[in-house]
Image (cartoon, rainbow, N blue to C red; front, side):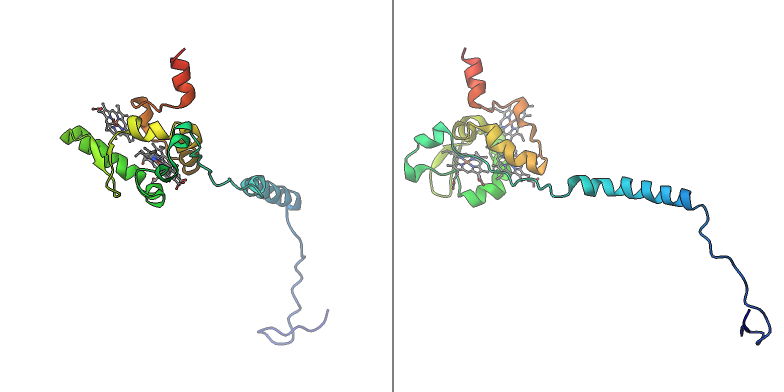
Length: 159
Ligand code: HEC
Ligand code: HEC
Ligand code: HEC
């Protein structure tokens, strides 16, 4: 054993501590379990991307409109961001003041109604409204009372 200089000078021998990993098996198993449990969510979702919703405006009612009439009650960009607010405003206007019409920014007078306006054109709720709502996990509870007027619903009722 070579001389080893420590705070006491050259005399004290180098301490002999055996280098050893204790409980190697248990540590390895523990680490393994940790990595599997915490890595699972990452590994399971690797490479999976939720496709961006593609709401379809291809409904017979919209197809029937003349080319330049084929638009929403307000500009599309605005509707995308504000349709929920618009619906709430309509509801308040109708229920509290009894005024059933809404004048669009293009100066057109339309019925302020969820079922009897929006859903008259957007007759494909599951391919339109639901596409976006499922993606962002919002579930408007309107359909417990308001008729979605989805085409297959209408067919089922009309039998
Ligand atoms: C006259 C038929 C008609 C009515 C009524 C109508 N829409 Fe639309 N809506 C359309 C059309 C057509 C488009 C697509 C316009 C485009 O492609 O630029 C559209 C687009 C939209 C969009 C944007 C979709 C996207 O891809 O970003 C939303 C949201 C929307 N409508 C919701 C509503 C709501 C809510 C109502 C009732 C307040 C309503 N619409 C009433 C015809 C209508
Ligand atoms: C382009 C995507 C898109 C389409 C199409 C769309 N929505 Fe939405 N909608 C959203 C998003 C995003 C929210 C949530 C906004 C938020 O939480 O701030 C929302 C929220 C709402 C809300 C408020 C819900 C709540 O609990 O806050 C209502 C009501 C609503 N949408 C109605 C409709 C109706 C009716 C249609 C079909 C005619 C429709 N939307 C089509 C994207 C869409
Ligand atoms: C508990 C039942 C109920 C629920 C849930 C409900 N509504 Fe209504 N809503 C009504 C009733 C009742 C009226 C009054 C109907 C009338 O006078 O034509 C109304 C009226 C409206 C109106 C104006 C009239 C019309 O024809 O549409 C709008 C717009 C509206 N609600 C939007 C919504 C939206 C958006 C939701 C979901 C976020 C919703 N409502 C959820 C019962 C409900």
